[in-house]
Length: 240
Image 1: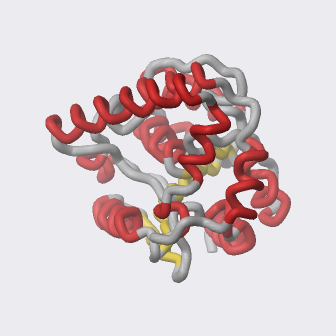
Image 2: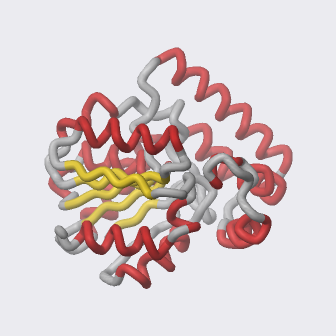
């Protein structure tokens, strides 16, 4: 497996899932995270392709949220390097140019606020967003554990990731899903209505797609339900 994490996270977010699912896992820190400098969208996609080229076949590419968008772009750019792909709580980007520009402006404003507030204060605000808990603010114990797990990134790095890797900075990929020829799993939490709808829509466009909507789960399905995610990925990777 090559597993790509979400915004503000680290590659170590996959440790619990990897231990439960078994197999060989590589989960690097993405640009802008864990001390890595932020890079452009195209450079990040090329970096992911390089990691895939170094991995032994068969290759299962897994991406969560921001990592799902990068995984999708890498698979479209280098389909020969991906045997299976699982996209969790992921989006293909924003279709409309005007909406994409608005999102880029919002991300730039958020990046500026992050630089002013610092990483700790930003994470406190970020992890209290109801979308992680399916419309409810996640419990304090979960937020505390997540803050600790996300330590080690800099304000400059995360702000750079917002500006360069956000949905406003990437091309829209939803009109290219039919190019995917490998089996693709699209999974999301039912309580994360927007991303559950996206999973269904993307699955309807891909050729060999499986869509799984997990009941009672919000956007943070990997961190809050690692056992279910691990079982789902192990089954998918085995071809079951």
